[in-house]
Image: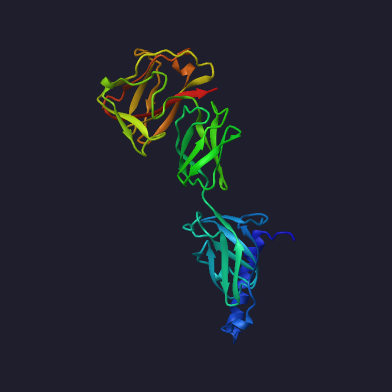
Length: 344
């Protein structure tokens, strides 16, 4: 049967609610449950413009149309055993408009829609899906080898499928906020994607591209005489460890000196920074302290990922040094995390 248009259903409800009210006022046996038929649910559809497509998956804080029969004497609606408010004027014998409560649980739940009427109770299989997955604080370690365990940090990880590029990974364990997976063969330079019933989210950087995640790689570091402080907690931009320094005006943080010219696979470098709102910091790359074209970065008080191509860095053909200079003149506390390369 062709689905009803939502406009027509809403118009129908206006007329039907008048009729239902009239019949209710004239009835002499409203309290006789024997006069009511048992309810039946035929389908559930999201209430949106266009054809109403039946679904067995719903999202909290969205309106749905339940179609069936025997709804006139409705008493209760439950999604995952959550008592859900409904507007009686949006109920007829064959259809109900109802908004799924935003606090409806989606984990360890019954996955059932239940309608209770004077004529009986009907239960219908219906899954409440979580919001789309979020990848917060990325994954760690970034420079994992095939077979290593990687922790992915985020939210709404309900029954996740994790892929490295197109390669599916083994999920070792997961909660709603963390997934532990084994890096599959061929994981190097692959982006990680987490997929749930509600959608997908991909990492913004690839495996094997870190200069610093929670650790420094390949001999790179910031020397201790800079007096930076490392912090380990859930406030990191990536993983769990970052470093900070309280810098005076025009003060600096100097990385050590090295040499890496194996950058053919990369388009530039990336980093996550934050500081006083509106403050500025100069990226001093490969020791070019006097470079008037060096990037001057305006920071926010929240972590933000910044990208610089080799063209932004005097067409560099190697990485030798990464340092920073406070460029506001007022000083303040500056935070640093998630240094790495950008894949071409």
